[in-house]
Length: 375
Length: 230
Image 1 (cartoon, one colour):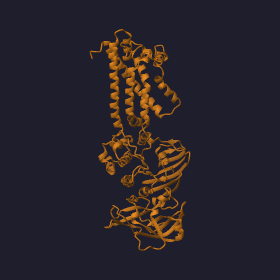
Image 2 (spheres, helix red, strand yellow):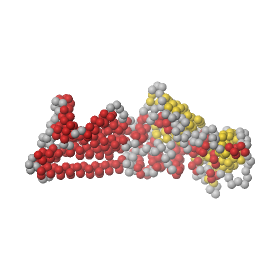
Image 3 (tube, one colour):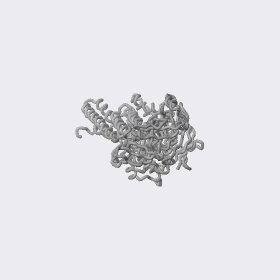
Image 4 (tube, chains in turn red, orange):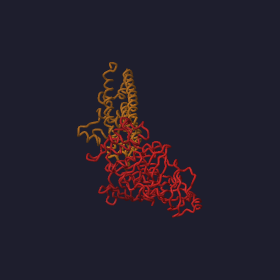
């Protein structure tokens, strides 16, 4: 099922105007706060009625302002995972989980309670009340509650934003499993490039209420013109396959035929992973450097140099491993004579790749194919 | 309780009966009005709010007289209800009506505050999970408002037990019919030698009032802990 969304809504300070499609898997609405992401999700949920728009999946129409169709929220059959969890404090965890199923039509396809509880690791919490649970536990229960409501669509509004780094890395794998194991489309709001890199099947990048890019995670993150989260968050996505684990704590991967060394990844050889290489961690060199401590040197040709507003510039480099972005100063770009077509080497320190930027498991049907050559 | 004479005993049971029914009947209305004031915006909202609070501000005698004009056997409402066999004037039902009207503002205030304390985001979450507005109210708003409803009910009960001015104006002071504890104390104090009977009823009043407060504390704390998700 593909969700088709077309919305226009005027706020006091900006106008949202967005048209996109969400295929099965996770579609991340990616942008800074105030770019209109949450407005879109709330319009899909029916919590906000836009000035004009149409939201439909096949012949199932949620909203059509032209025809005056507007399903109330409780008849849209959505699983909405909120940023703050929003568990019902007066109900036990089990009652929270079964709340939505109670209202779902009898013949609706249902997730198995035991399976969801296992997937989320919340079996020991079922008889507790949400008040005393940790943020991570609450958010896992919120995910389960949404899943078990027999939804035709799952919405997640920055579900990790209220959690600290440790809790984030606790929850992220569950969304990866959701993406790979649940058949309903998931609309996921985020301002974090890491989350996009790890989760997105497709990305809709928003800026000031408008869509500035949409496509696969690799396409959007590798485009130097699209930095919805700012230049600081820039970073391209490489698809690589785990080759072997070395005794000194490194994992060797194969990225488009070249070795890539990363800190140990707890995944079996043969697993395809997504690795986000932050643009500010990439050093460029015209000649192949020698006697360098960095383990990863990827050669390629410059596709584009995009000066920023400050002293920086983003350089897009097409390598055999895929598109890389490097954030360097404009002075360096000029000194090296970087421009389209120029050959250059990208240097990536192994330890600079954060574990949160490495995601395991990729949906086989995902439009991003492994070892995709640089475009 | 031998130390209460038959007349005093009658006043006590009548007071309990009047307050019980006054609270029970006004509770659903109170919840509805409190919800309307807390969550809806409609024309005349301020008027309704003022009307609800009027008995709190008006002299009780004025409220009683207005009740008499409206619900008396020849009043516009009273005469209609009389045709269905519902009579308020000079009956214990009238005492219950007066007590209920006087206690209503306190009840509505307590419930309204607790409804306003329910996070509308939880109600939104409930609706996205498939609950219609009525089910949202029954499964989220109402249970989370329970401490306020309990507090409001007990407050209203205690207020009804002590209502005097409106009751005596509306339904007079008829032994066994409308002579509640406050009216009985007043009556005993009007006759020589009635002080000891009055004193006994004063003690009963204090005990009932303290008991109500204690009960509301205990129940309130228990319900709040439950609703608070502990």
